[in-house]
Image (cartoon, rainbow, N blue to C red; front, top):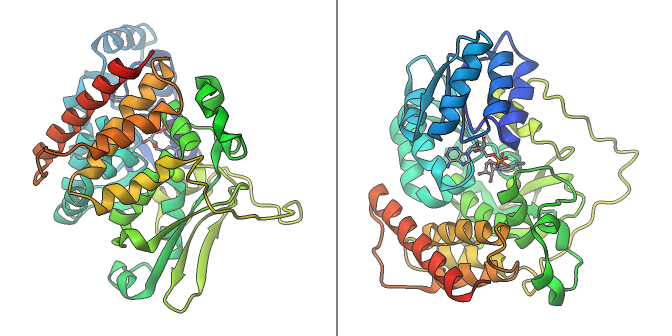
Length: 390
Ligand code: NAD
Ligand code: MG
């Protein structure tokens, strides 16, 4: 199988290559892509010999090209966002791992869907932004969509293989959440949280953006929206429960109140390996659960005073069309602004709630409309940061 890995230098990208390295005969790397990390990309090219390496940043592309040359490596460098489309739609590619962070991942994920590839989707922002239009592109292109987000992989693994029976059998989807680093912190002190504290997740090692999203629980809000689109369930059929041990990765409750769950150690190589091998199973490199060492699995109801952002998922899904796109864009700006020291941690929610509540813009009917709405919401969020930030 020829695989393109979008965002190969990130947390999901490097875990994907770790799994691939265990199955070198069966999976070959067609292309790797990254934004700026030249040295990581150089090492990956040396190990996996892709035909193409894409750097979306032009200066990084120039540097990579000269380093590959001086090391005598044959990988060809392509530059810019358009090249991402070329390396996913190429006829030689069978599978695409979509692990770019943020809405920047939507155009190549969508191109892979339209081209009918096996699409391993980690980039949750692209489905939150693309919504039903994204799902329609998957169906129209005859693509196979395999969720990589651990919760959605867990749900997918807990559901029958035939999606046509899902609607008549599912009662509800129960997404588990670790509660992040601030699960027990006094909500009154959340205004003092530093970026360093916010990115230090207790159970998972991840990129900076998703780590901040886990600390605010906006990650779970995005995952509620993601589950709505992936599994065709109504917003009120989705429930979130805090499970601090991160052993149960999510559950499906059926009409008869029977619950099916997927369990494992918190290691993204498990959902990645499943995405690569589905419907078969291959080794992932993750360690097995040791039940003799598991003393308790506990559950809590999320406290909306501590995590007000969680509620925004239902507000977006039940409000006017385009809410999810606005929320995602606002959150990307808010998280970036927090990491850059322009706003406080608790102001992330203020930005998101304010932009989501803004009305008077287009009802998106097409992808072009969605991108316009995304840009409009980003501008609104930037404006909030300028007016209220430090
Ligand atoms: P990361 O920040 O570690 O890596 C992001 C990758 O995207 C890097 O390779 C970077 O070079 C590339 N990139 C960044 N901006 C880009 C741009 N504008 N254009 C092109 N490429 C760009 O992020 P991550 O933690 O690996 O997360 C990737 C995606 O997977 C996110 O959507 C995240 O929500 C999702 N996800 C991650 C995890 C996890 O455990 N890390 C779990 C579930 C879902
Ligand atoms: Mg997740």
